[in-house]
Length: 106
Image 1 (spheres, one colour):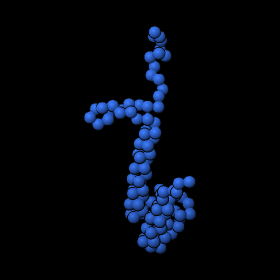
Image 2: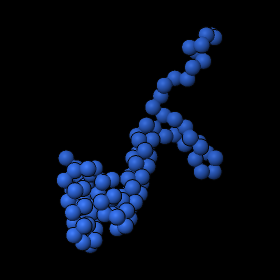
Image 3: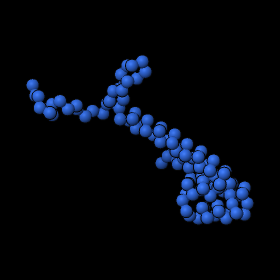
Image 4: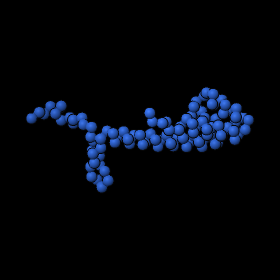
């Protein structure tokens, strides 16, 4: 029987065991963990989109800046906001909706 450090190290397997409901242990593989990470990313992106929309309603150029940065749409939104508050909001919501729309699967 080997007693060196290598024999006591756990083997790398694609499975990990986590405590499920009621304390029982359930096997989860790497794809489950990746799926959980995607759910977290989707939730944070959805929350950030809601924050951008709220900021766009309060101050339209801020929401556009957070979505596309300083570029053509940002400066256009500032111009529209100066000309009228409502056109700036409409443009800001349009930019956010267009940039955060789900991309079609290839």
